[in-house]
Length: 184
Ligand code: FNR
Image (cartoon, rainbow, N blue to C red; front, top):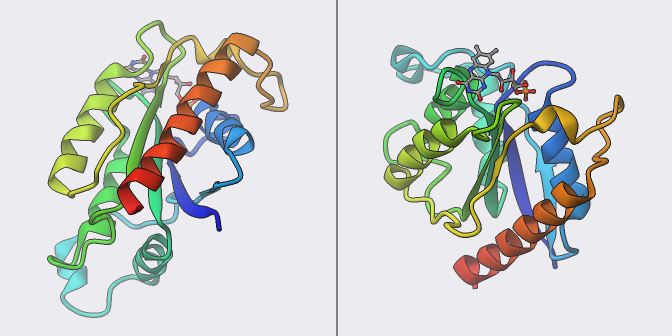
């Protein structure tokens, strides 16, 4: 039986290298792991008042969807040395109502990308800070910072860099093993 993992992509733009990276990781994943992108672009900004009554339908749908997955892989670009608002918003929506977080206990992985040389280190680690609080056991090694991401893909978003492919393969294999270790 393969483990189902939700992939949260921190960029909404068409042609996103983060999305291409998520798709490449999904294609490289071993049979024990099914990676599926869960969309976050339709989630209204988190507003605690809206959780007092009937929450927005998109929030409820997202919460139910994430609850049905065994693990969560975050693939994010870096915006201004931190994580983009859309991915933080998705994390906040999934974390509430208080005591009913859908993230709790799910084995996580964090992959960051950048067109620059640093590979989104700032975004990667700011995201990890939230995962500590959310009680998500998170793969520590190997770390995954993909710099110069614009050079890995062709115009259709296919991964064409063999060196990067090998690194992504090693990462997704390690994440699959991590999911098994956490879930037993
Ligand atoms: C960026 N970019 C960027 N890159 C980086 O390495 N460090 C940073 O702090 C930032 N900051 C930043 C802010 C904003 C608002 C934008 C739009 C972009 C560049 C970023 O790496 C590049 O746009 C990537 O292509 C974004 O990822 P996607 O959309 O291709 O997945």
